[in-house]
Length: 427
Image (cartoon, rainbow, N blue to C red; front, side, top):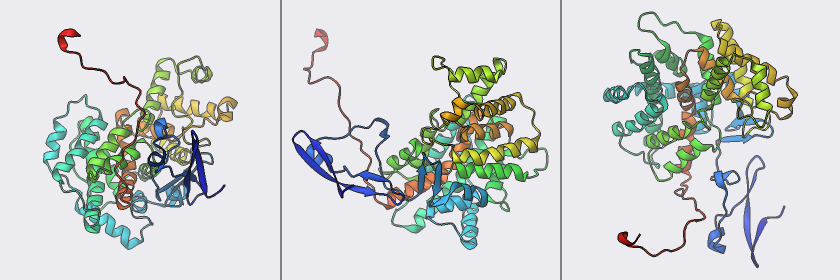
C-alpha cells in the first residue's frame, strides 16, 4: 500500500491520504473529494464510512474483540465497577481510589432532581412507553439545567457530566416504579453507584430492603457490557446532535430516542416477545428452530447472531454466566425462561447455527436476566440506555473537545427536475 489512494473520475485522477488507526484500521480521507472533483460518495447507512476519529472504543467483529480505552471487555467485566468504567470512558484512564471516591462523592452531592419533574412524570398516561418517558424527562432536565457547558471550562464540563450521571438513574428508577405503582424516592448516600440503582428500583415500601449481591453483580456487568459500542446509531446521533453545540442533556435525550428503535436497543425486548409467542404456540423449540432455518418462513430467531460480530459476541459469553447465576439464585421456574434455555442448547449444538456463527448474543441473555428480575419488557431498553449513558457522555465530550464540524451529510437528489408553477384553478 502506497502513501496515497488514487480515485479516477472520468479522465482525471485524484489523490487522497490514507488514515491509519492504532489497531491497523485503514481509511481513505475523502474530505476534500467534492471540492476537488464536484463528486461525492454515497453509502446508505454509512456502513463503509468513518464519521470520526475516536480513542474511546475498539471493536473487531471478525475476531470478537471489544475494548474500552484499550482494556478488554472481559477484564473490565470481571474486575471493575460500572462507575470505574464510566470514569475510564469519559476521562481516558481508570481512576485511582482517591479519584473514584471523589467521583462518587460528587455524583451523590447532586443526586436529586427538581420535584417539578415528578409532576411531568405524573402527567404521562399509563400507556406511555418507558423509553418515551425517559427521553422526555431527560430532555426536560435541560429546563432545570439551562446553561450549556463551556467546552473550554473543565469545571463546567465536569459539572454537566456528574449531573447527568447523578440524575438519569433516579429518572430510570422513577419510570420503573411508576409502572409498578410504587412510591418515588431517592437513593441511599451510604451506597455505591450500582447498589443505589438496584435499591432505588427494587425497594418495596412495606418491607426492609436487603441487598442481593448476585443481582447487583449482574446489573453491574450488564451496565458495563452496554457502556459503549463504537459508532452505532444512538452514539452517532449523540455526536451529530452535539456537533450543533447542543448541550449534553439534549444530545443524550436524542440518543435515547435513537436507542428506542427495535433494530437497536429494542432487540432484548424483541427476544422476550419472541419467547412469549413460542410459549403461546405450545413451546416446541424444535419447531421454531426449524422455522428459523426455513428461508421461506417469516419467523426470525431474535437474540442470535450480530450484525457487527461475525464470531461469538464477547459480551454474551460474560453475561451468560451471570444469567445462570441469577436464575440459580432466584430459583425461578418460568416457562419462558425454560424455552430460552431450550433454544440456547439447540443453537449451540446445531451445525446450521454453528456453521453460520449464529450464537446467542448479549440481547438474548440480558433479556433473560431482566425477565428473571421481573423487569417489564418495555423497561429493557431503558436499562440499556442507563448502561450506555457513560459512552454517550464520552463520545459527546470527545467530539466537542476535538472541535468536530457540524454534521451535515450530502445526498444524491432523485426527485423531479425543474417544473413551472401551475395556478390552483388550472391543476
